[in-house]
Image (cartoon, rainbow, N blue to C red; front, side):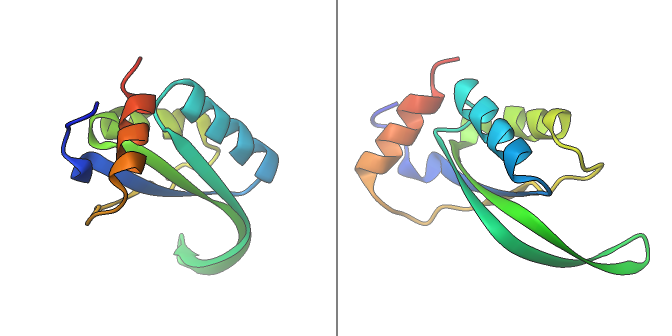
Length: 112
């Protein structure tokens, strides 16, 4: 909502193994107003340790724009829609940006 602290806007990172399913996840988050916008960045290579092994996989990076008041619901909803047993949900702090953009993000996530 206008007038709220612009630092309430958050960016959340999440990776997904499949572009079409990542697109479905993004659309669901926006339709449910848990996110104002989700950017899909295919072609990401992730190197990580899982169950004692070093793995390397092609993934899609979702860059999710939301607000602090939606983070709890987002952290609950992503695992319901995601194929990984431990999906990446990394909430980044906000140190500033465009006031008009923040107003838009807040407006798009405030109904619902």
